[in-house]
Figure 1: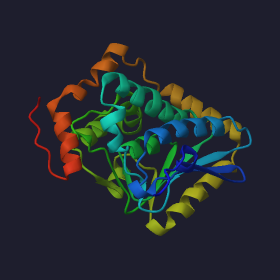
Figure 2: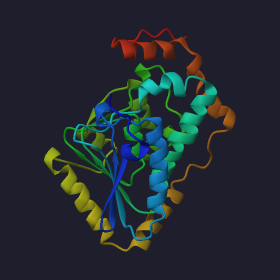
Figure 3: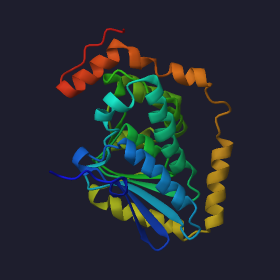
Length: 267
């Protein structure tokens, strides 16, 4: 029987001079991000941020089929089936990992091949630049699963795409191609599939050739000048997980695992 991967095996770190690469390594599930990967991603990004010798961090998925195809939905049945567990899962694990990507002092580049869906889009959206191939796909079709995006995750999508595009993505649940994602501001640059890695690392090298203190200050100023003035209260955050008790949520998960279309009743 195959041994389960450790968290260190699921989030790989490599270094080439002043550029580090972080790889989401769960290719059997199209790099779907599980709980241990979220926790490990936070630790890795915090460690890299503290490394004064780095100039840039590239984030990517293992293989060419996906950056990350979302969260590991199988875990939802046990790790976020109650309000208490959902708050830990999303506010402690997912949101803090995304914060660590966003708060990395060094510029970050997402190298996107294939599916960049749900949690994958959330991670890529916290990077400073996003380079994708023409066959890349983007979206967050969680409306088909009967649940809403957690506030700590929606914040990043709003900052990246704005309210109109965020609502389009979440309300329709449509998967966007690379060109449309570029038009809507989800990605920085689209190149031919065979050139994605080359262009992403060329971008990283251009960043690394610049003054690191200036790069860090630009990141800090952009974030400060576009900061959301006020977040949600704890009660509002708890209310956002009301879907856990809904029939629609149970129907969405059942339909996903049974590979059928869900029938939602608004209950």
